[in-house]
Amino acid sequence: MSRNPDHTKNINRIHRIQGQLRGIEKMIEEKKYCMDILQQTRAITSAIKSLEDNILEKHINSCVITAVNTSSQKNKKIKEITDLFKKINS
Image 1 (cartoon, rainbow, N blue to C red):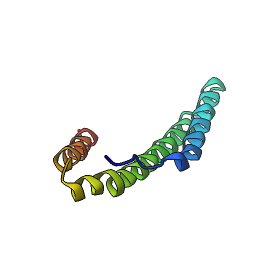
Image 2 (cartoon, rainbow, N blue to C red; image 1 turned 90 degrees about the vertical axis):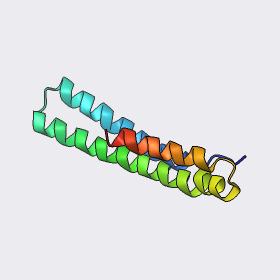
Image 3 (cartoon, rainbow, N blue to C red; image 1 turned 180 degrees about the horizontal axis):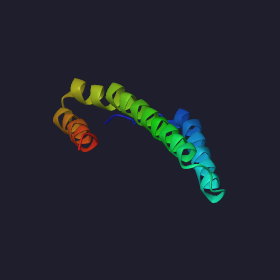
């Protein structure tokens, strides 16, 4: 069985996203302009997408490649990715 990839380098990204969320909370409390708040929510959405992309890339390059090379869980890993993309696109 393969080891899960190391995602600890993403912790800084997560901290930045948490900081952005706190910033939006403060903007709402201070009754800032709607478009300024929405601009910040779009930035968070982009940051989360980047985080997801990074984790997915590591998953493919680690877990999926190992499964395909060993053939033991190839179909399971392919189904996981297929199901993920179905959820993303729905």
